[in-house]
Amino acid sequence: MSDSLPPEIIADILDRLTDAADLVRCRRVSKQWLSVLDSPDFIQRHLQRSTAALSNAGLFLRNDDGALFYAPDSASDSPRPDPKLPTHPDGALLLGSCRGLVCFCVNNQRDLVILNPRTGERRQICNYSPPDFPQHPSPAVNPHISKLDARMFVEYSTDSRRGKDVDLEVDGGGLATLVLGGYGFGYDESSDDYKVVRIRGLVGGGGGVESHHFRAEIYSVRAESCKIIEPTDLPYPNHRNGVFVCGALNWVAHNDVLLALDLGSDGGGFSLLPQPKYIRGRPEVKSLGELDSCLCLCGGYYVGDGQGRLDLWVMKEYGEVESWCKVWSIRDPIVVRCGPAFLLGCSAVDGGGGRRLLFMVDGRVWFWYYPSGDRVEAVDMGGIVGEGGFDAAYCLESLVRLFDRGYDQKVVLESL
Image 1 (cartoon, helix red, strand yellow):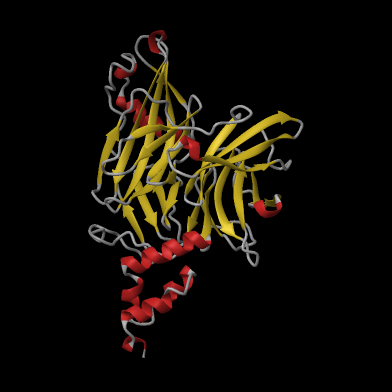
Image 2 (cartoon, one colour):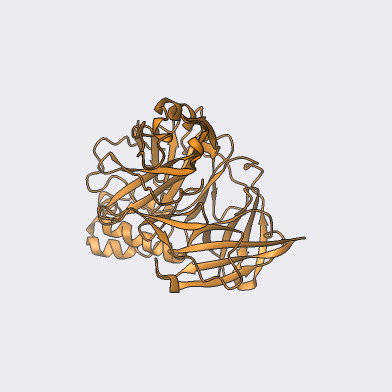
């Protein structure tokens, strides 16, 4: 009966379903339904509806030991291990999420796993890493760092993956500190390509000269190749993963600046982003997030004795300083702690048409913020995040396939 309906009628019926789980089950109805559900136009329309409705979301977490956990947005229990998630004896890194896909790094940072947790499709890319940090960085950066042996970078890069800075001896006296600037995962719409970014940096003081050098390794999933950018006049990003907004990955960088990396094929590489015009001085700590497809800045002000506030700013027009707008200030005691607060995601609230925002403070305190009532609600994460490194990614569930338009070559497809 269903196969007798025209494809446009089937698409109109299925467009009325928002829940990604229901649509995945509909794939089994018939080949014609499967063809409609797998069409790029339908997938894009569903992604847009889910984004607008703040529905079909889940939270992915990685603890100190590299173990991965998942918590559906609607679940009331704590995050739990999920057999769909990749595992490795040495743990896994959570690099970020984009368009319903989540990216992980396993096998001592040598392999990538890109997963759609709703459909169960994933692609594993082995030995994606480019050559290690160049043995001879530009002498203009620091002639002492330029003699740093590449083997030392290989040896220490694994130890630094959780944000640990490592001091290395260099010629001329002094130390060069190996730092991890984090990762990023995003999408280049102009080339229909997903890109993974890894940042490594050296901060050197050899010969009494203090200097900075970092590079970004940009891996193209479509081309299966890597491009390297080595800025010489910009501060290196912090240890957090980049926030993907408007075709660019964004970080808070050292020296208290905002740094953006355009992922477009013809993009201009790294650039500085303007900060809000703060009314009462710059915040003591800041972090970046995404809200309503816009870049969001969380600025913390702490004055001690449980006093202070967390301000949320949104950049309505990407890259335009005048578009920064302060939308909320949170003053609840659970928020005012001596550490940055990270906005992880936003979801709809059942029955009221409102929404709530999920934050993480100090890597140990989690809370929902309800803007409509200026109310904070603590979240029990079951103690899975400790004192050390952590990663978190809030991901919309979608039907997006990594394998459309040529991606089906050299792909390991597993039904999880």
